[in-house]
Picture (spheres, helix red, strand yellow):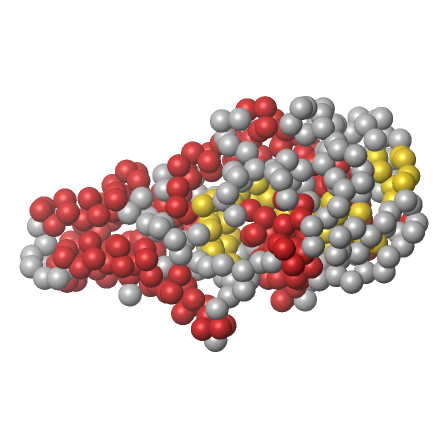
Length: 390
């Protein structure tokens, strides 16, 4: 059943509209469930019956729609991590440096021996090559950086190993700078962002943080709970909606494409600026699920012909070079327009950004360096390299 979930809304007894597989509509009374009140879709914004050629994902044993009555866990049980008080007073640059501390310490120890002094020779370049490879930069990016650093050393007439650090920073900044393309949502309303990624990458959490980010710009946001596979995914997104006071469109199981379709129609009726559409996590090797997410994209296009305006892949920075394969497969399937790199504050080695820039330069829209709601920010190449080295 399609419903709006928002903070402290008015409870209505008006029947909600449900869209069945034939395109017809059924009605059923809506009752408040758990700790979250339910407001049914106003008549003016009610989802219309889908067109006859509206593609549907056939139910499989994994996602047969359950009975329409389902209690919803109280939001308090799904609370999102609060950021420490010490972080709240930090600037973004300070947060970035703090978030990359593990990566910087690991990389810094390796580079300290190289840049400590001595002459620049072939042995030094071989050691630098090893460091770059172990930092998850990949073969292509490493070869590129070494060639570029050699050229800079020659042009500047550098002799001492301590001077090599500046050349490497400049070379790395230049390599990843093309990924720095801030997301522009102007000119389209609603601006529809379709989110994709594997399970555990931090997709749903990134959606919640993006909602806060767009709200800070004065934009209205609506969330579509299109992850109808994972247990509690809908409730998790509702928790973020509650925290940000944002409307969430959800269905109790069933068709992810239909949820996104109705969310867009509701956003049009309400004059919403941004629609963030969640989708189920899937591995690139699950070909049947990759075909399904293509169908979700086509249904979004039926709801709004020029949508989705942004297709974002969420990547876990800790997976290293596996991120490259994910980018390639999802890009081939969907035509990615942006990336979000999460969990850089963990055991990530930081170099995967260079690998992406060299092999599949999809714009890196945002990076995440912590669990706080403000720890997802637009990617800045220079700030990132400075935080990584300094």
